[in-house]
Image (tube, rainbow, N blue to C red; front, side, top):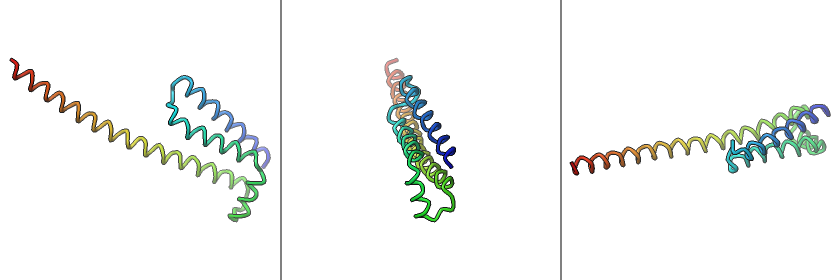
Amino acid sequence: MQSLLHVITILSIILLILVLISVRRAHIRVEYSVSWLLASVAMLLLSQSRPVLDFITRRFGIPDTPLTVFLIAGSIFLIMFLRFSFIISSLRDDNIALAQRVAILEFHLKNLNSHEK
């Protein structure tokens, strides 16, 4: 179990560093990096707090502590993916609205050009 927690600690630190580097190089926007930073910090804290994991395991009747770690990690990332699905859906709707506005403006420009000739 302890080696699993060490692996999670290392992976959390790697994720944290990768997100910070990506923000610095402008590969990811700051508002989207917050979710990844929170997830990596949550996993880092969770991997360093064995008593909390044991308490959650006993409280919810989960048979194994490693299973608790994976359930919590999976839940964190599932929530993040849901959040990003909302963001992508909103961006898609905004793109459609923008394309429609551009088409309307092009139509008006063509009408203005045809009236001038």
